[in-house]
Structures are given as C-alpha cells and as structure tokens.
Image (tube, rainbow, N blue to C red):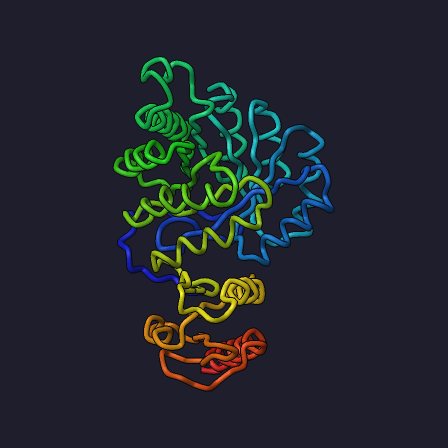
Length: 361
C-alpha cells in the first residue's frame, strides 16, 4: 500500500478508529456499509470479511433496533475492521452501541433532537468514541429547509456549523463530518464551504447515487473533484446493491488522482477496426483474476500490435494482441510472443513473478 502526497491536502485533525488513523497525514481511508440484516451475525460477518478482502478499511452497520445493537459484540469479535454504528431517530440505540464498544457512530442531526444528541455526546466522551455528524439533504432540519428554500449547499453547511458549535460547547472534539446530497454540485459546494472554515476530518460521499454506472459517474465527479482540491479524509462510493462493487470504484478514484496506489490499475483500449482479439473477454478475465489484490501494478490490455505497446509505454506489463497471438511487453518493451488462448494464464504468471520480485527488493 502506498500513499502518494501529490495533491496538497487540507490540514485536518487526526482521529483514531480502532487503529485506523483518519485525517492529519494519514492516507485517505476507503469505507463501506453492509446491506445485511445486522441482527444476522453470520451474514453480516461474512459480508464484512468479503469487503475487507476487497480492500475496505472501515465498515458501518445499520442499527434499526435493540436486537441489532445486541449483535454488535458477536460481530466485533469476528472481524478486524473498525466498526461504525449507523443510528437514526432513537438516541438510545446510539448510546447502547457506544457501550457495546463500537469504534464510532454516525448520527444525523436532522432526526435526533439537540438534547438527545447531548446525551449521546456525554457517553461518547466517556468512552472516547468518534462521532460522525452526518448531515444529509434528505433529512435536513425543517428550519433550515425553510430558511434556504430547500436542501441547498448553504443549508447543509449551516447544519454542520451549528452542530460543530454545539459539540464543541460540550467539550467534544472527536468529530468527523459528512454533508451528503444526491445532487453532485450541491454536495461539492457544501463540502467546500465546511472545509474552508473547519479542520475536522471529512467523510466524502454522494448519497443515493444509484446503480453501479450512475454511482461511479456521480462519485467520480463529486468525490474526485473534492479530492483533487485536497478536500476529504475518508470516502464511500454508495452503490445500490452489492457493497463489494463500491471498493474497486473507490480505489479507482484514488488511483486515477494518484493519491493512493492500491490494487491493480488495468487500462485497455476502446477497440477499433484493427482489433483482432476478444479484448472485452480478456479484460473481464484479467479483472476477475486480479480482483482483491492489494499490490499496485499497471496492466495494459491493447487490441493492436502496431500501436499497443507505445500507447501503454508507462504500464508495468501488458499484452498487445494480434490475430491468434500477441506480444507480452514490460515497461513498453516487447518481452515474448504469446498465443491468444494463453493470454490470461501467461499474463497472470508474469504478474505474480513481477510482484514477488518487488517484494524481494
């Protein structure tokens, strides 16, 4: 895992979630959230372990009732990732979750009254538990909706400012902030506003982003824009359905911006009339074969033996295909000829050798 400080990041306070540092000089952390029934310990643990294998670094679970809270100790016992409790409406669930030992909780100030938030803060302060103030455009305080005529960026930012002031008045500083909206420009402007006036760590995300393609587009634009401006300490790509899909997109955004080099970066040409191999099938097979790998490697899959190596000269390794065969190249230089039916096997073998060689250095 490599953290590349090529973008000047906003200076933030550093907090700790069960050994995972957030903010300050720590790498940007990738988070996700289970979609299992938290009361089903076996299913929830299985999904968390799958997410961890995929690269997830912090995990959040929904706590809709007391039975879900009661499952926390059993879940914590079987996982390694810091566990965050997501609580809405019932402040007592948040307090109970803190007492059960979660690393942090996420509460929404739009659906828990101020005095009850104070009760949560008191217990979190005693247990040194991190609290994420999760401002959300879908559940903003009614007075702010009226004041701004809707869930605008200014409304989201004011909600965050009001809550920061209250938390600080209570002597509590282990805060993380999020200002989420399904509208990308609103989300960007809200985070910019809060980043300009606070130094608390920010969790970035576009809420209700949709299925994989829409979620990827919205997250790449929203999260990516802010990261490029140096804003953000943790991220979550929200995808409808399987949360495992979130992780590759999140690390893809970080790799594209050269913020973190985690996992393989696979580049492939869009294909044209010169392509004489089944490049789509090859790309899918290599992506599947390398899924979950933590080591960074740039792999190029090109459909043309004429321009392929040149177009992917900065790749560590790759294949430039021709009719029935192709050229395996390393660092832009031809290495050996490979039959098309052996592309996947040979390329995976060479990738493993390259990674092993790096480890020995």
